[in-house]
Amino acid sequence: MTNIDFLLQRQSTPLLTEPAPNQQCLEKILAAGMRVPDHGGIQPWHFTVVSGNGLQRLSELFVNSSNATANLEKIAKMPFRAPMMIIVTTQFTHHEKVPKQEQLIAAGCCAHAMQMAAVALGYGAMWRTGELAYNSQVKQGLGISEDDEIVGFLYIGTQCKELPLKPSKNFNAKVSYWQ
Ligand SMILES: Cc1cc2nc3c(=O)[nH]c(=O)nc-3n(C[C@H](O)[C@H](O)[C@H](O)COP(=O)(O)O)c2cc1C
Image 1: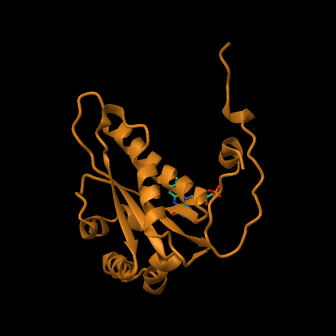
Image 2: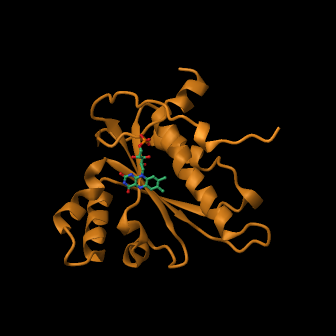
C-alpha cells in the first residue's frame, strides 16, 4: 500500500485480541509517538504502557474510581478489550510561547501517531476516552497531576477479523478556499 493510501484508508479496530505488539514493535510505536510536531520541543506528554498483569491493575483502578451506581462489571472488563493499552497523558510544562492548548494538541498527535504506527506494523488499534479519562481518581492512580489530562486510552492488539473498509467522507462542506 502506498503512504497516501495508508492515510486515506485509516480506520479504527474495535475488536482486538492477542498477540500484543512484541517489544521491538512496541518500541517503534513509542518512537512514532515521540516524532510528533512539538512546539518548543518540550515533549508535553507521557505514555503508560499497560499489558499483562497491568490490565488487571487498571481494571481495579477503574472499578475503585467509579461510582457504586455505575455498571462495575462492564467497567472491570474495559481494559481487557485488547492485550495492550497505551495511556497518553499530558505533561504540561510552563513555556512562554506554547500555551496549554498547543501542548494538549501535541499529546493528541502522539495518540494518533501511535495508532498509525501500530496499524503500519500489522496490528489494530482504537483510541478511546469515556468518563474514566476525566476521573480524578484514575488520574491519581496513574500518577498524573490533577492539572494534566488523559488524552486517550489507545487500545492495541491483533484484529479479531478483517473489517470492511468504511467509505471515505466527503470534505466539501468542511473546506473553503481563499484564492
Ligand atoms: C479524543 C478521542 C476520544 C475518543 N473516545 C472514544 C470512546 O470513548 N469510545 C468510542 O467508541 N470512540 C471514541 N473515539 C472515536 C474512535 O477512536 C473512532 O475514531 C471512531 O469510533 C470512528 O471510527 P474510525 O476511527 O474507524 O473512523 C474517540 C476519538 C478521539 C479522537
